[in-house]
Amino acid sequence: MKYSVVIVDDHKIFRDGFRLVLSTMDNVELVDEASTGKEFLEIIKKKKVDVVFMDINLPVMDGITATQEALKMFPDMKIIALTGYDGVEYVNKMLYAGVEGYLLKDADYDEIREAIESVMTGKNYFSKKILVTLTKNTITKKQEEKQKANMPKLTRREHEIIGMMCKGNSKREIAEKLFISERTVEKHKENLMIKTNTNNSVSLVIFALRNKLAEI
Image (cartoon, rainbow, N blue to C red; front, side, top):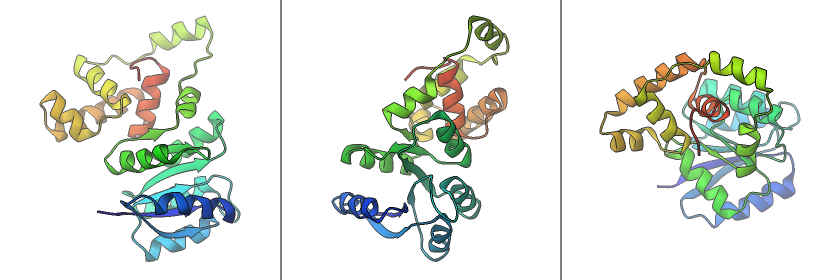
């Protein structure tokens, strides 16, 4: 089975190079490319798209807005940020827009391939540098004590599940390893999101890593 992919980037030279990389992958088909967020939204209305590689700084409509609009129309579409921005502000904005992966433009062949496989099997994928950015904790001792006091109380099973999510396990893999149903895993995940005030798997994993509820 081939995954249909779209690249959204306003630099033709970069798109050309990225297209060459994708052309060497036997499970990927590049179905189109766009130079603006608005152009991308028109493409997905006409073509079935599995995975999108989205830059942030785009003319007409930026990658953050384009991601939000695309996921309103196609909630199951997998969007991976592919950008030169590694600052926490940009990372957070794209994550809250709904991306399921975040790659920097210096990503190599193996990283790109792994990112595609990860998001298409229900996992998330982040460049190592982005994981470092997300898990940096510069709070003071006083803030840390206050944070601990307000930390949600998790059950043993919830700790197990969030730990496995942080290690990249999909819902199916968690269910198989814990000998429970996928529906039960989903219910635990819903409870975890309520307790941590997060709204999706990505923000839940980030919360757990930042607050040392799990390790990678």
